Length: 217
Length: 339
Image 1 (cartoon, rainbow over the protein chains, first blue to last red):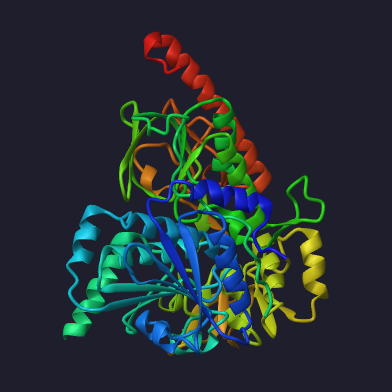
Image 2 (image 1 turned 45 degrees about the vertical axis):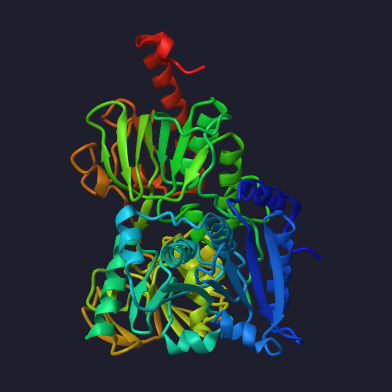
């Protein structure tokens, strides 16, 4: 059974028809596939069929430990969306429901390698000189979430030091507990700073400044 | 694991306007908001071959995408998932050429034509504007609410219900949203306590029947929430009985607030006539006090807040915008009109 219906396929083809460059979807699963691993892999593979620019690579998280480490993958299912370079755009858990939107946006922006952010935002992010990790916790039934995820991914593309993860809270309940996620979207920056809701770019940038200051202080 | 809808769609960020793929310097119609009103307007203006831009705002799909199941929109006898309905509205608008951007208006200028809309990323100009920004959930405005918002206090059961598996929640309110979302929360929570300031629900009869029949639901009448309690996490709410004046504490892990909506009209203060509650004042042709600026949906409707009505007013606004433009083209240089 396919995950993407014919009408959705048509929309996706249309949406991805002008991809600016090649994109690799690097999927991590394992031999005995976890609850949503099989579907995540299948989703990536079905997406790969819809554009000549997209290639899908599937790795076993256990058997290909080195590859996982190279890409900083620490849990599965995972998809790394990689363009001309690896911008640090990751999906942990299946990007289904509303999050399929986020995956499509990630593919398109990674292909272009050019984030859709304000000039001020791009400049600020490009100047970040230390690692910054953004995790956006979501549920697939949250209509506000793709906004937060896409913004975080754009920020990862804007800076070599920023990486951004979508984390599907239902699949990683231990992380939901660890980061006290009781509502989504919840954005966690460098473990310490958090932000509730789908905030506009300037507000997220303020939070990033806060996280960078904490790292200094 | 429950509710895991598989892929049903997405919101494209950009689409070329018109066949040539060029972004027009001035749109015929700019629609603010991509809920039922805005997207219905876009279906109509698209079919009228007007160059249409929809600035989706923070919640593409609008209120329906925040609703588990919509059972009162005609044409779907079995009901339809709110998210699914929202995406159908969108696909239909796009089919007729509307360009939808995931951006948000930050300032508007209706003082001169063409009208100017500033967004986070750019500036757009439109000969007409249809405002369909909708309404957002009213907050309780009590101590503890800000502190716990997103961390135990929520206005989105479909987003956050999962986090309350086998936990206790309270729902504040007695209208359709409170009861429908309260019923949804019974899928997860061990107990759903409805706290309502009156002695009976305002919700539609059919929802009331389901709520009263649901063993997980309990009702606290004549009561208002005065404070949300907790240290790191929500532990309870302090409620006051409005008839007896007594206060008591209800232990809970989460608070879902459905006490009505407030219109999203901050951007328009000083530019459009608003009523004392902040709703845009529109006439029966959905015209605001500024010729060429129309309003549709919940942003101008303090009374009904129904998808079918929002869609209806969206259609009216679109037809009036079309009429306005045809008069505009008649009185302005005909040669300037795009083919």
